Image (cartoon, rainbow, N blue to C red; front, side, top):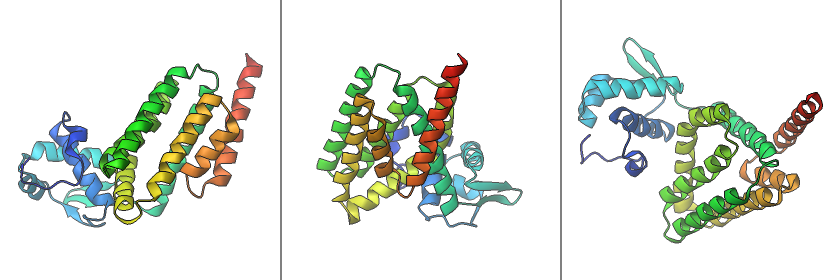
Length: 242
């Protein structure tokens, strides 16, 4: 890729990735940001010329984006589908389901090391705010939640998380950049939300975790309670059958 090409996706996040993955990351965030409009046709030849690469990594990138339903592969080229409000809501539904499930499992684990790791990440988030580094804050934000997900060592939950992560990561990055420019004071609220997560995991208090989920997922109050009740019912049924 050309060193003169201006990217909006942080290159340091994917420095060791294949060219195809790096291109997919850049095209993904441009599509989500609206810099590449819905309905646009992406040509392999034009993209190869723009990024100064062969067509092979372009094909790899387009296949990745097609698997995420962000584009649609057709004979004439790749058509940009983009993300609708419904898509974004469904993505956060998935994330909410993952986090409620994970927390229920965490209740039965020793969380001492997890709390220490989350506290370290939280400190890095605070440093990012100090230096007004939205990209670093976003990276640490995603890492914070991924660390929680990984803590229960559930391979299929992690698989779902990893499938949703690229789009989710781009949405968070764009949101944090916007906050940095237009609503910097909101960073304190976001950081406080993560303090509540740590408190909930340390105390293993469901009420505090529900508070954290309420604060972290806007407009999902009813879903939080519904999902939480479902997790508790499943857990009780499993314990009764053992």
